[in-house]
Image (cartoon, rainbow, N blue to C red):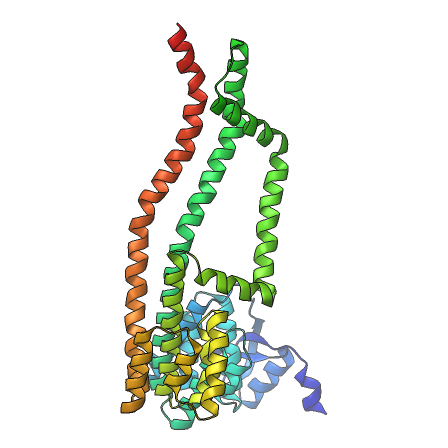
Length: 405
């Protein structure tokens, strides 16, 4: 009954100071449900507490995949150096600048300290550690090669995050330019064009068609600017929320992204790179193929590849070879299929898929670099045409008056 009663108590970190049996001052920290628990624990250890203070918990920033990748790399490095697991968690937790990560690591450390396996402790936090991560850690614990698999897992996460970052930067560049262009045009339409309109009205002459068009758009902006911003802002917000929360919307957008000109090829290559890298990592860890495919589809980051992976898994479970099942899915390039076939024949699928992942990751790097250089002149022409067209249309009446004079 006492155990059941304490289960619901929220534990906090307490910093304490006291004297041991020899009268020496000792300090430390511990997790407990309250001051009384800390006092009781210290007295059992022969320490007379003189000061017990609850540590203030800062809000901390949101935990990102990059934080988990960094933690995995640090943990793998320390375990390779022979640092005990619990001590490694202490070192990583204390050295992290994000209080949210420190709290997460402290929770995991507490679970491990009380006898829970590391993979089971990770599974309690599915928001940060997905099934792929937990399966690999579990395989490492079972085989006694946890530090090697953590190192492989850290490499996998670093490469995956690098690809995601490159894709985001490639997509964000044109989007940010369009936003800036819209803001500049809005300022011109609301503040600059009306001033020109007052001057032209005083002339009492007929204005050219481009000038009348720009002035008409300016009038619309001045009168309805709140509606324009409301519709665009609200539409964007609801679109993003639907994309995040609605499964059908996610499926539609994933298919549409693959069909985009230029960017679709980039997204496809990044999906293939992540798919092959994930399966290669799972194979190298000794995870059975059918079980490994559970995590592979979601890791690709696209519904098209997720549904294709589910079909591949069903076919492989009934005895079809991996290469044949991937061919039937009709979403993988011929090079990946050939590499997979060679891997199946030679018994080194993990090695061949790793080579394919290396190739497509390099392709993504080259394509992002090429897109950056290609987008610059396109954006300059776009902005020049837009802003230049507005400026010329407003100066046409002045040119006309100059010719008359």
